[in-house]
Length: 345
Image 1: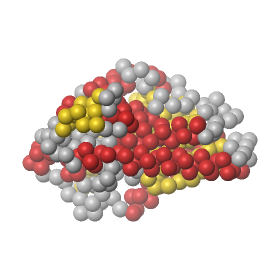
Image 2: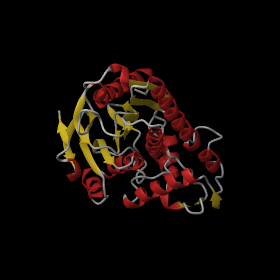
Image 3: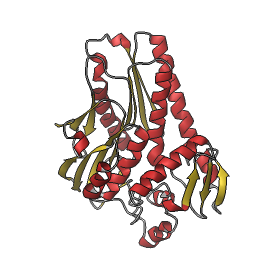
Image 4: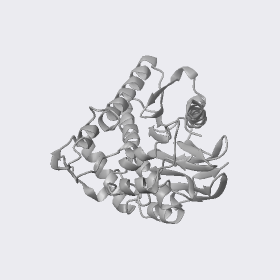
């Protein structure tokens, strides 16, 4: 079964369940007229921006500005538009040395390489040929052949990319192409949060398909309540209580195809070229959504033991890991940073 409109509808429904929980802060002893929210399809997912302000015009302007910022980041980082900066870099398949890049692309790549190094390559922004091979969005999806995967793996190597944020230059070896989809949403969330803050919004939420950032603190509550979707059932697995920062979830239920009852999902192991196994979902909380985005993928690929070890040695990071295969949920593992802040449903 390939991904189609039915899958998108299910993703929308799941998204709205979580968003409904996140934004319950707006209904607590506050007038509905103070709550302003909009949803748009961007960066391959549904993005929601919610603000709380009695000034409707200011709220609308802030929401529009946040969406404009997300659109700007998407135009900069996507490899699916020929005129984006990443596409222009990828077009130079002969490789390059000391190529000037924008400060933002340099920062995103730098943070990505930090996570790649810390995770021994479990998170890798050079998985482009593998992503293209596993065309999960195609209606006629078929499992790639072993020879094709082996050929693609020759050009998957995060160490083939170097970046200097001071000089804003990059060096990329021949045949390597960048895919920033695993980190760009988190960065876009962080930037949208910064825009809302700059426009005077004191309370708000930006959610890009599970990558979430917060503005200020919720009124009439001490913490934000963030729902984690159950990976195999309708509704929530649990709720994480956060003071702020960013949070991201990677799950094998987000984009996948079933072939002979086996789930082939979009979170690929750069070491094997196949979808990572043994984990159903990973939720990571950090100070910034960009780091949570990359770490969630890294932990998913590493598996529960090595993944949680990575989280424990990463300052300010915490995680909830759900193990299992097929339709059987295994263990729910919580890192030390969230043990007092995770409520299982």
